[in-house]
Structures are given as C-alpha cells and as structure tokens.
Image 1 (cartoon, rainbow, N blue to C red):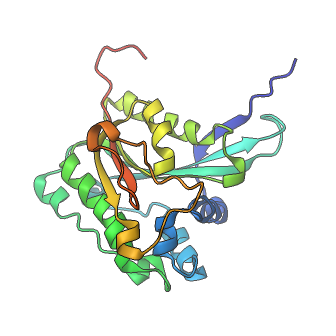
Image 2 (cartoon, one colour):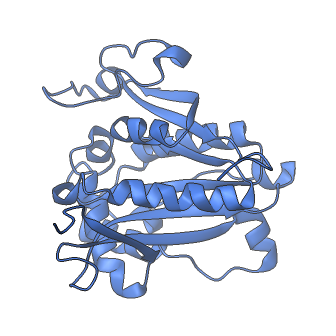
Image 3 (cartoon, helix red, strand yellow):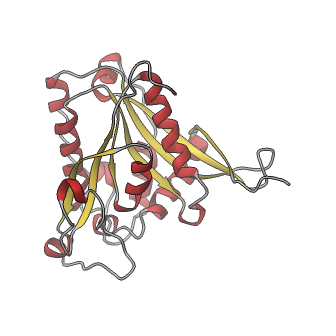
Length: 258
C-alpha cells in the first residue's frame, strides 16, 4: 500500500519564493489580534513590499555578522503527489545564528526602533514597538548575547496546516543547533506554544499584552490568546490579555545520543 504521509521538503529560500513567503506571512497572521492592531487597515501593498525586501538576508561585513548574526531563510515545500511531483511552498522560517557569544556592548546596543521605512505606510508603529519591540527587548535581556540559534519567524499557510511543514522547519533548526551544541531561542505566539514544547523548548518569560485595557479589543469566541501557556511560570492569563512566551531549548550536551 502506498504511503499517505505528506511529503515535505525543507530547503533554503530563493528570491523566486518571495511572493509565496509574503503571502504566507500575512495569511498566517491575518486573524492574530496583534497583527490586526499593527496593521489596522489591513496589510497595505507598501507593508507587503517592505516585508518582502527585508525578509531575505543582506550581505554583511565580518563585524556586522559578529554583531547581528547570520540570517538563514528556509521554506517548506509540500508535494501532494509524492517527491517526484510538483511542489508548493506552504511555510517558511527565518533564523538568526550567532556562532559565538557577543560582547555586552554588542548585545546591549540592540535597540528595536520600528520605522515606516521598514513596515510601510499604514502600519501603527506604536503598537509594533509595544509588541514586537518589547518581545525583542525581553529576549535580548534574557539571552545576554549568548551564542545561540534564534527563530525569528515561523509561518504556515492556513489552508496547508497539519501537514507537518511547521514541525519540519523547527526540526531543521533544532538539528542545526544540536550539531553546533548551541541553545535555540524563540518567542512563541499563543498557537505555536504546544509545537515548541514538543521540541523541548522551555518557558523563560512571558509578555502579557493588555489588549482589552489598552486598545479596547475583546477576545472573539473561538480565538486563543494563550490562556494555557506558561501557567507554571507566570500563572493564569488574565482576562483580556494575550500571552506570548519567550522560550529556550538548551544546548545538546556533548556526548549525548542523537
């Protein structure tokens, strides 16, 4: 009997994948309350263009690499007819690799400042700074410049979920980190938390956004704002609050089994 397991391949992203990556990114986060607040009128063409331009790594000097890390952009392709048939890009991940620890001067200089140039006209920079900026600052202050692999973005096309693409991308990263004996770090959205826990990520800190109090938005029926995430670390999530979780997967110990 032929296998019915979906065939997923992870590979390095190419410029030809840009349109698919941009589409997947905005479709994946379309119903996320923070994304809706960051783009109150919906993602504009300017925002989409800026994202497509900045998602790919740019050439860096040795000094810039030491400070900013090496960016790795991957895509997951789905082959509905098997590995010999046509493939479809259905998910992507963006990683930043710091092979060596950074100095205190280097990591403390990471000051996140969103701009219209980066996010396009129509984006609410105050919300972006309150959410993405604060997540970045928390991550920075916990990591303290340690050598690590950081997962910046993981997104999957909503109509291609549960095929294993997200897990395949995470596994690619954890395998790389294990081969380098490095820890892996990320900031989890409410819906990604269970997947990351499955791969050995541990709770480090939380960002509880007071969505109702700050912006007057209440949680719609059927939406998940992270109510059961990191409860042991930070307690139950208050009503009207959306929780994101700072997570870390420890470095693989030398001599441990694969």
